[in-house]
Image (tube, rainbow, N blue to C red; front, side):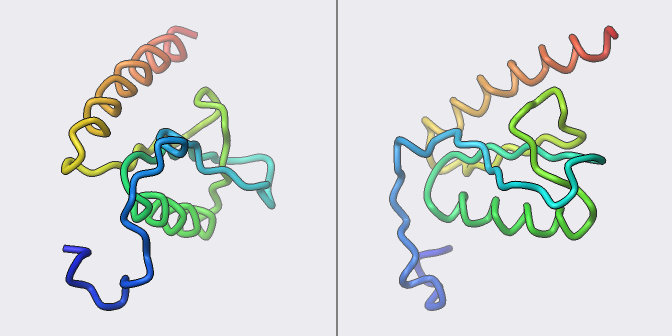
Length: 106
């Protein structure tokens, strides 16, 4: 899909192992209110897509957080083409589910 898109010729499609699972974060304009948490896995396009999603959420009044427990919305961005990324995300979903159960007990 991306390989044939002429508007993306300068975008690297490489996987940077250091960035895998990196949480998208920037200093919020509004420190209070609804928060989102985004983890990205896979190629640089996924990280770019996460930034686009973050800007849309910011327009809707959400602010980023690095703390899962503070998030009103948790997003995990990956592709199913990269098996390792998909496996990693499945493991992360297990962690998110445990945190959710812990939070809901209170």
